[in-house]
Image (spheres, rainbow, N blue to C red):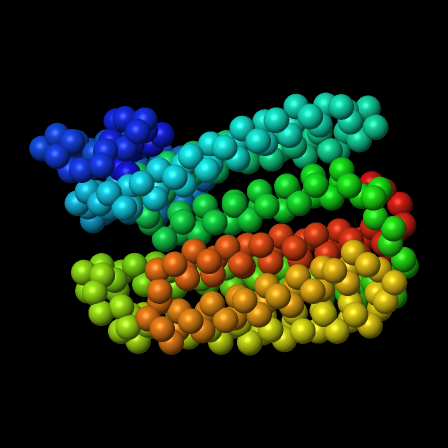
Length: 315
């Protein structure tokens, strides 16, 4: 979908190329160019002159793809999901006013979340106008992870008094392990976005055929991403070991350990399926979903540890 928030000028996407004007490629190429010129101005102000120059002069960014009904409606459903998320966050923010006197941080967090979601929507429009430029996609992904952390915090803050946590031994060690897991997962997700971009280039060059050969043609990105998974496995293994050793009576944390084990196992398994079975299309979004859920769960565990150590409301 070359425009935003509408799709080919309509709120409901077309289902066939015959529903589009003959010059739609030229029209939307110019439409995206004008948006990129405005975005380049912002980049200049922020000190990213090189990136701004590329946006202004790289004509490959403006090449319009042929209409593809599957990709169009996939993007449309993604936008609908984003709109629903925005509405739910607005409802959450309104609901948080109930706690404005006893917990101002809760309300403030919901307000920040809404602002970030609005900014994320705008960045999504830039992803479209720049024709899926890799570094813009990475920023889009990082903001999404930030939204997940904010929502996890809101949920935990509302429910924190429901937990009956025992004192957690070696809490500082475990806290640093959780932070390490969060950082390594963040790096792995970013590496994953680079692999996805490399896959898209290879797939396009091969006209989306010969899927079983894609991995061998990706290059260093894939091997770095795959090797980094060993570090992911190591740090998560250490975290699980310390949690089980030091949280015998802490039901919430022990339950989280089970979910960590399941998610790490499924994440590695889905990665192996992509590597050795020709990157099945349905596995790619599943692989990303598992990593983002695990990322959110790790932050949830961090909050549990922080709360159990203080044995009081988070301040």
